[in-house]
Length: 275
Image (cartoon, rainbow, N blue to C red; front, side, top):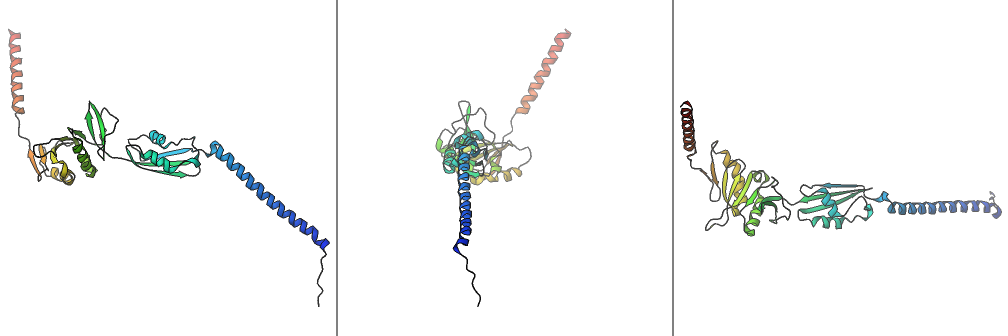
């Protein structure tokens, strides 16, 4: 039977001390590392290193990038970790022309703001200046000397109820067709306060009704394609759909008479010179 080797307590004490010392050193290193990381984190959070450095705005058209940043309240002096996305969203969406905003933070210091603007469906003239009309029929407070060219001019809409109705109809109209319209005039008649007259970019005029405008106006390109080249007149889409050509005028006859008078004056002048 083997004899077990007996180790005295005196021999084990140095090894236990060494093991405990190693554990204590490892624990000390861990504590110092955590302390160092905490100090570094505090320094980072309090220094410009933690500030937002890159602010990107996407989706804007009429509202300037600077105005959106100002609404959001974020600058390159803003601490990245203090950016409140929900608060920024609410502040930006408070703008009359912005219908939606989303905020995205990308580590380490980038903030992306994406917005959707309300569609401008027309411009109304007041005191020689134009006001943009948004898709909900509301009128922007800002003025411009000339319309933006991105929407038709709305003329004669003295009653807000009809302005809001035509705004709703224009919102539902395909952009490819809306882009063909130059002006829309409110042209009420007895028994039909919804009648409107459109001036198109291709030279035609269209008589329509506000209430059926979005439903019938998309047929306009098809109707025009069936007309004779050079024809001038009004396309009626309020009741049915037909083309009414303008009556011939006497412009040609007036021009001929003017030319004859001019020739006669020249002849008289020549006779006086010879005399």
